Image 1 (spheres, rainbow, N blue to C red):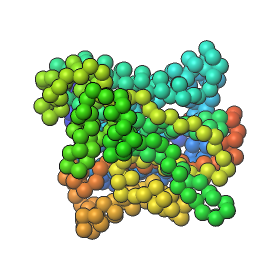
Image 2: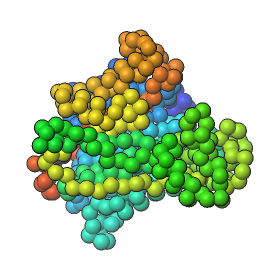
Image 3: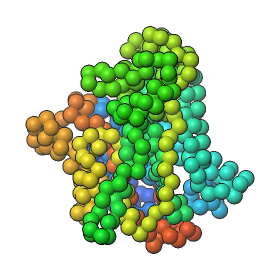
Length: 390
């Protein structure tokens, strides 16, 4: 546990935590270059990976992790690969909390399900892990309400990917995105296939869902400054956190007026349940690009897939980040070299925090359900210490 005074000192700083057989040797924990952290290459039990994070906010609100090895609390349970992308808003507290708790909750719940029902990974296990993490965070908000009320306005989009027993599980709450690069043999091309469902009020389907769930509230979605927002405040309809939009007890002072709603509400406005996709992986499935919304604001699905497909694997996540920054600079009619000079905080006016994880898929490894490899855990985000605590 880290003291509050120390947290205040290190809050603006960040570095990754990594655990595994090779901890402490070479660049296993990645490298830092100004506001950029990256790990150019590494191995997971199903192939290779590359990771990168660029900070734009004054305090990094993007948190992420990659775990490869046991996916349950049981030693005899299945192994696989887990990726979590947690894009925070209203502060880093929710994304930091989810980064430290969701995977552990998944392993615990998976272990219990595996023991009692002899089941592997499932949509139900993943959903329960999301909801358990949500309940824990809302309990924390309640405990800190009087001393730190603004934590009630902190939330996080949550994108999770799991490879286990030849299956791919994608769970999403918010507007981060995962895109599959799939080889179309007939055309000898790698096509982009978006796997995640996004929950952003700018999509008509999301607005319709909100109106259906809140038929008595004509202001459930509001067009504000040419952007659709839930209650005129937030763009996403699903998240972990955002307690002020889920429990009316937080819709009052001492929360800042800009977050308080004029009308009382009697059921949660936002949901924490993820949309879940489960599909079997095939030899033509080449790689997966997981990224927070900051990347997809600047690159299309196919542009990102083309960059990965046409570039060396080593450093590819960092290359995607650079491509997104170059596009962000172009939109503002400035040079990329000048954008790189802008400090955190001010830089948020030009682009968001961006997290990218690229998983390359080795079907020969994926098809071996009993595949065992060295365990690896990389945790990237604000105020993360060498032992993984926050």
